[in-house]
Amino acid sequence: MLDACVFTIFGATGHLSRTKLLPALYRLDKAGRLPEATVILGLGRRDWDNSQWRAEVSKWLEERLGGSLDQEALDHFNQRLHFFSANIGDPDSSMRLRQLLDSGPEFPPNHVYYLSLPPSEYKAAADFLALSGLNQEQGGWRRLVVEKPFGYHLEDAQILDRHLHRNFTEQQIFRIDHYLGKETVQNIFVFRFANLMWEPLWNRNLIDHVQITHSEMAGIEDRADYYETAGALRDMIQSHLMQMLALVAMEPPATMDAESIRDEKVKVLKSIRPIPKAAVHAHAFRAQYTRGRVEGQDVPGYLDEEQVDKQSTTETYAALKLYIDNWRWRNVPFYLRTGKRLAKNSSLIAIRFKHPPQQLFRETQIAAVPPNWLLMGIQPEQCIRIEVQVREPGIGMRARTTQLDASTCYQAGYQLDAYESLLLDVIAGDHAQFLRSDEVEWAWRVVDPIIRTWSVEREFIHTYPAGSWGPEEADRIFEREDQQWRHSFSASDAPR
Ligand code: BG6
Image (spheres, helix red, strand yellow):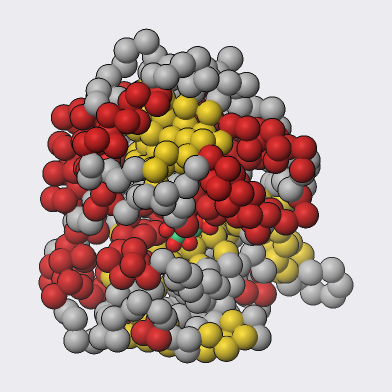
């Protein structure tokens, strides 16, 4: 049974709030998953009252959910919505917020404060809450949700962490990475640890390498402000892709509680071989999109996007090779890549096994039979497939690739999306799918040498036309020529 709470969104009119948080809260409400007395309080600078806020939210939900928006559910959701106009730099606003939240039974005593703000404003928001004692657990709980990127680099993240801990305990802080709420990402636990058969295969003896890709056809949308300071490495790799790496590589946790899971993830991140400055170019690659065609439409290059500096060397594509120096993974490369304005929307974990020791069914003298792959689709397809070789029917003894499908409920009825699942966890006080402070710090340690190198190399960046799979030069990070990017589930797309 969940406690009713006031769910306050800082930055309520921003991109994340409009496109992810409010739709998730609406869907939870529609499905009857929010406690009845829950209040959703939008906090922003605009001078809106509740009715203006409700009208705007209805418009955003309409844009986002279109035909699936249900008028009765929307009316119900609207009743939960309140707006509070505030400037987080203003002490008086903090006092007024306190008065509002203390003003009567309409506002439950438990509070979620969701910082849907640029990272540069997290400290100010935490101070704003502490100023009027809204961080203190009197009569109910207080939880602070912080989005990624958590800081801009290692030192900044450490400073931010110390700052937040002045007013909030670690138990009160929920560092969200919405990839941990995705169906297939959560399935990694079950698939790995509920099946004994994987364990003997899941290591350096049988796995050739691991690829984790997140590709998007979209550009930076209306987020130039944020993206110019972030870039693909901070935006996707330091957080989402590094988390997926940790889940693929971690040891089984002692139990499924938050600390046991996070202990194991930290061990993986700590074991990632540091990239020396001199080796950054061999391990990391960055590029930027130029104009091109996506889904039949001409789209501008990054430098022509609104509010982007014409000299910008912010990367919209990044690829990385990492090694995990432990008993299970030593010398198995983990390739991570992400990009905006690529050929397809796809998030895929692709694990390539080694070739059998003898090629009995060689197709030609030089072409080996393809190796086995384990493919975990995060989106758009949510499924797990295992690629194996079977006999090609007919004459002779030739191998043909087929896929075994381990998908479960993905075509079935109502599924929680990532934010729905994680917002419920926040309300339930469950940290298992949220990042602990040391976890974030170790992830920064991995990318920090790259950030430092790229931040001083500002003269040149590789480019790729929008709508492509990124520059071919990115292949230079592969260890061997027979390693190539796996773009999708399609067997014909599988490199040898
Ligand atoms: C966000 C990034 O964290 O994740 C975005 O800031 C990216 O740039 C998004 O587009 C991808 O998330 P999803 O759930 O749409 O795959």
